Image 1: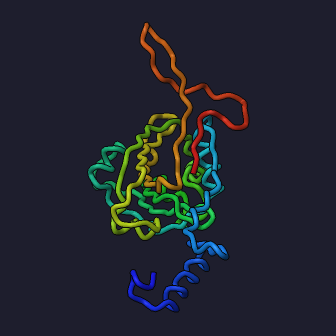
Image 2: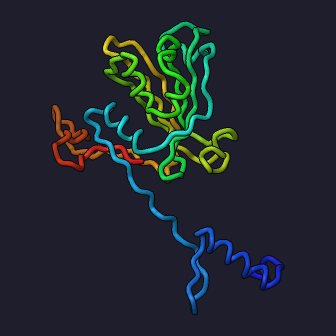
Image 3: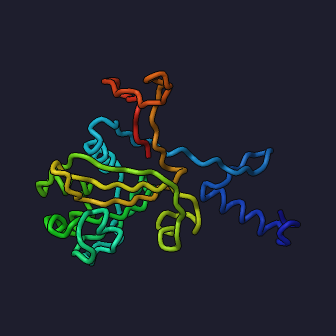
Length: 229
């Protein structure tokens, strides 16, 4: 190391000591210094039957930091997805959700202003949004969700403690009430090394065609379909 980086042995030894102190390296007497493998993060699990209740439960097991909160005119794409007019007043919030101090996801939510004003910025910092919607009298019924890929930009990369351009799992969800009215638009970007979306499938033959379908949920405490963070 001293030769490779053109530093003294004392400097190289001090650097190794600092890496070991930070948990990034492990010293083994008589063997040397080795890179320490990342420690697995504990999983937070939520069954997919009763999806919204389980999303709330997952929110209660993690912590959220409110980055920004306010009201603004709805951009055209947001207005379209929330089925409102462009420029309509809408609540906009950004949060970082973490597990044991490690950031998992960057969450951007848009909520119609008449619903958003039923709770405060302080409420948003403390409670899961779905719980706040239900407290406001919104009867959440369904959601349209897509999962794709995304990249960390210069704004969210430091919040997620990753590099600009790092690959992320992108989830987009429109939540509707029992009347079919959109009540929330969520865009969530997850670190793929800390979040997995898992689903067990089985082969089913319909009209002579074999297709993959989700396994029906059971009463087993560890269900076949789950969301893991």
